[in-house]
Amino acid sequence: MRSKARHFLVASLFAAQAALGAGAQAQGRTEFLAQQLRTSDDFRVRTQAALALGATDDPAAVDPLCRGLDDGNDVVRTAAAAALAKLGRPQGLPCLKARQAREGNATARAQIEKSVHALEKAGGGGNGAVPANARVYVAVGGVTNKTRRSPHELESLVRSAMNDKLRTMSGYVVAPPGESSAAAKKVLADKPTLKAFHLQTTVEPPQYSNNALTVVVRVTMSTYPGKELKGEFAPRLTQSDTPSSDRASEDALIRMALEKALDSFDKVVASMR
Image 1 (cartoon, rainbow, N blue to C red):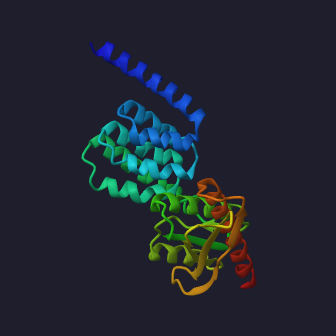
Image 2: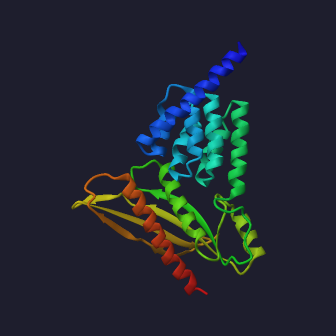
Image 3: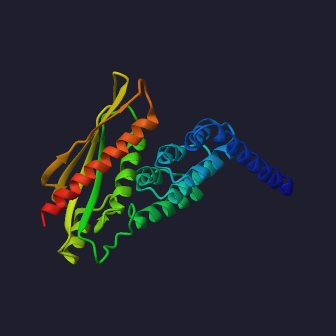
């Protein structure tokens, strides 16, 4: 009986994978997988959707996976925790830690602890070590969300965009997410030549008017860890031929605005030498 049950489960998982693959071709992969994780009445499909989201390398996968940590099935919660670690986005840490405190299943709790450790070690794009050629240490702070998007989704987008841009900037290193003031001071004491800054982001509501979309993103620059205000960058970008809600265009403009803000930030930092 056990052999038959196992064979049935494996067959069902393969069927679930095939169904997910076919559906993902018909619409955006992340969007489709998130929908399956949220709505499927088959825990095997939800499990496969969670694991597949972890392999997308898409920051938009953080939000559905965080919701997956509250799934009623232990296997799905375990898969969602593992997927957040594989995705490697530090935005998954808060929801993992929140679930860790109340997770009752031993297997799921063990995976959550493993995932928390993996993301903390990764440090949001770095492992916490400061390269010898580093000259600027940047703490990417929280996001003030003035849009109607979920906080997880928007913060994931913003942090991903900022980390991706900062990685391309010579001499920059990103501080681990949630770093304590004491830990930051130790890093700076060990490497006193570093300039350290904290960046806080505010995303204004997207505006649709005159057949166009306008996005405004504000990035506030402060010292770190003291957080003495040093400046603000507020790129305003407009895309024509966008008469109604277009999430993909909003994402693209937000990313572009953040890149412009960081370019301005880099110029200010350079002037401080």
